[in-house]
Image 1 (cartoon, rainbow, N blue to C red):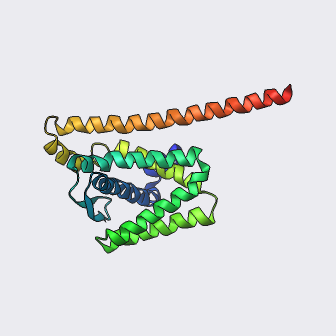
Image 2: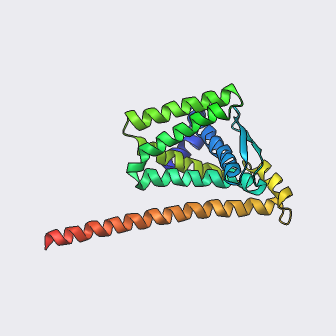
Image 3: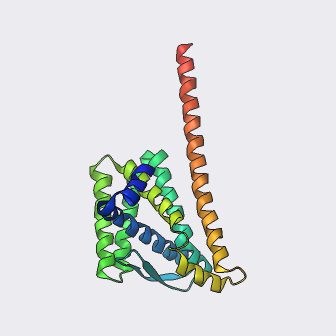
Length: 221
């Protein structure tokens, strides 16, 4: 998965950039949905979500906790990416339901949080593709792992660019720490989430191998 991601992004040329463009838009959607979810869980509401053709975006919210909403974009998208990666790697029965849920969330966003034809159009296309993958193919695990891992790596690589506007607003709200310090705090949180996820996956794999070895010993006896 890492080889595919880095190969497309850095050695794929124009074709690689075109293939990675939907991933960039997906990361943007997860980022903006993180803002929206932060508003909802802190008692606010969502007015609109916008995804721009250049990969940027914004979310209009009403009420809620400003600190949770601002942090929800960067940290929230990292959480979503880790969930997708974990389910793809180790929770096969959840792959199809998760792809369907993600598609329904995109459809809901495109209809009820409408802000532009481009945003709704791209979300509808994403939703249709995810539903097709979930219901008509057997590559759901691979797709989910790639989307999750791409989201995580993309966020880590662009930590000093992607969340810049959020960091500035967050630093204004939490002004006891400068924005450049918050940037590294957020980065540490995101990297830690990924390492914890990997540790859980490795432990799960080791336990599974141990169980298989025990079964083989039992059969040998």
